[in-house]
Image 1 (cartoon, rainbow, N blue to C red):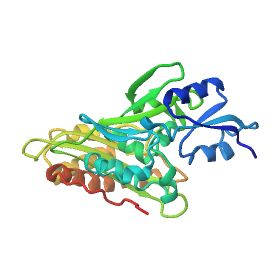
Image 2: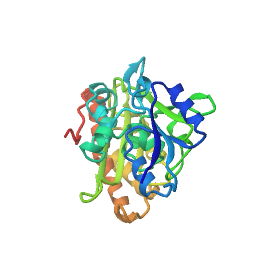
Image 3: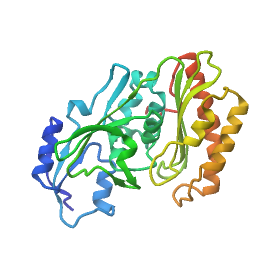
Image 4: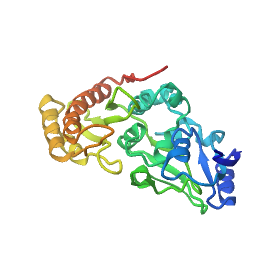
Length: 308
């Protein structure tokens, strides 16, 4: 079955927008294609007629960069998971993102799958998305009507698989977030089914800033997912951390808050609500102390990352 009629390789965001516009909703962006190809063949959006065109954005420089600009790290939406895993800059300044991208699928998927792909397809279980939320990331979006803006990535999600982006007209260009500084650290942990597809049962990304004595949480951001229909920060956990001492007692209190406020749903593809709720404690007890250690020592080496 023919899925598309023409294949264009765009060299700039403007060219990609122009090609999409010329096909009036009958063309679509492609980068890694790990979600798109399945969707075109088997998904609910499969078509009786082939797309007029696919627009490849993997040759656009600003979509394939990893760089630091001032206090921010910029990561192009077409950067692959493997590129992120191999980036020493991201490992040191946004460790959780390396840890989340390093457990996506297998090597073949990581080699072609992109950070922007999960976000553009509005997948609430995206590992990279969980870390981007904890990093308080923004997305650079080129809209089909000519507008270009940075906005919080949470605003791109309207529901499971429902994005504010129209991949027939709009382009997700890049992400930016503040690089970790002194007394700041991040970590990502997840639990997944060992058999079949590598679906996360639950994942947790945290970012912490300690006070000058490195004895209290000065600030914190936590994202646990998938819990609801869209990615969201665990604000009740954050509030329980801010100003509290770094101690076992605080961790116990945070776990209790999580049990009271985090309500994962039963998923036939992941696990029961009861099991996933129980695993929230496991993830918090793994991720928070690790982020604190990195904030105290300034040493950040990603754990559990697949390099094959």
